[in-house]
Amino acid sequence: MAEIIAVSNQKGGVGKTTTAVNLSAAMAILGHKSLLIDMDPQGNATSAAGIDKRIVFPSIYNVLVDLAAIETAVNSTDIPGYSVIGAGNDLVGAESELASAVAKESRLRGAIAAIRDKFDIIFIDCPPSLGVLTLNALNACSRVLIPIQSEYYAMEGVAQLMETINRVKKAWNPSIEIDGILTMYDPRIVLANQVRGELSKFLGQRLFSTLVPRNVRIAEAPSFGKSIFSYDKNSRGAIAYLELAREMAARLGMPSGKNESTAQASQEPMPPAAAKETML
Image (cartoon, rainbow, N blue to C red; front, side, top):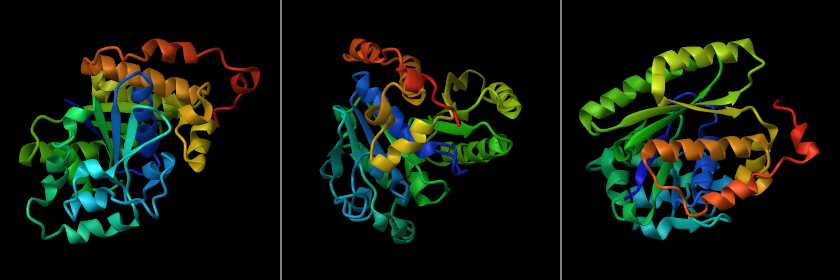
């Protein structure tokens, strides 16, 4: 039965969607059948999978509001074993439409139950807010992954999200566990290293040791409707997300994927042009 991980941070621009997309793809590359559910009305995770968010149907909106069968909303991608349930523009109205619905915070949890045994791991890309959509994700998940940018306000955002998660634990989902990942990391910046130290104290072993660097290839990939692995598998960003996937799989006790040896072989030395690539 799939582990369900909500990727969430109330603060925007921290690499939340980027992490959800590339970690989902990395898990599939390692041989773990993965599903990414786009719960963000911006639909960026949908676009990054090469799916047109303007016409995606059925979408997660139809699953939550119209109670469409969730299996009908699953889309394949260019990476075998990596699937996506997309979000269209109509998801913007879901918050108000679900406001008076019965068990509105549990719609996603109930829907996922029908397909949980078909995947090894399920990621949910949450919106950068604390409305009904995020509460649905937190109610449905077994773990929350918090992407944290190495900047001044990082700790404040994490503290606020932890308060929300604790409220959800008390009200609906007492078994939630929390993990953190440092994104857009540049070791040349003194503040980045200070934030890393503070987060290590705050999260302890819950902070993944893998660091996702600030990397131009990661920023470019979504504009081509691709994950970093389809765009530039030899970039530092791709290598970091693949290593993060390995670390996460080990933490979750997932067996080595059937494609692990292939994934290792694909990490051949970077060509000179990529090796000189700037982090900024």
